[in-house]
Structures are given as structure tokens and as C-alpha cells.
Length: 42
Image (cartoon, rainbow, N blue to C red; front, side, top):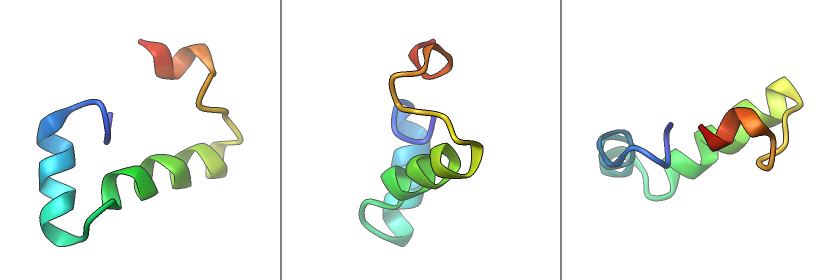
């Protein structure tokens, strides 16, 4: 969501470049999911 939706990406990029990717990776790390998990492919 943070990276796939341009609105979220633009919102977070205004505050810090690459923040959307950081948040995505932080959520994945916290939940123990992998980027390849089918949940992220919706």
C-alpha cells in the first residue's frame, strides 16, 4: 500500500525521501512476512 498507491508514496516522500519503502519494509519485518507473500500481491 505505501509503495503501490501513489498518494501514500507522495505523502511520505514529502516528509522524507524513500520513507514509503522504509514503512513497507518495517511492516514486513514486524509481521514476519516476505515481500513475495500473496498478501502483498493483491
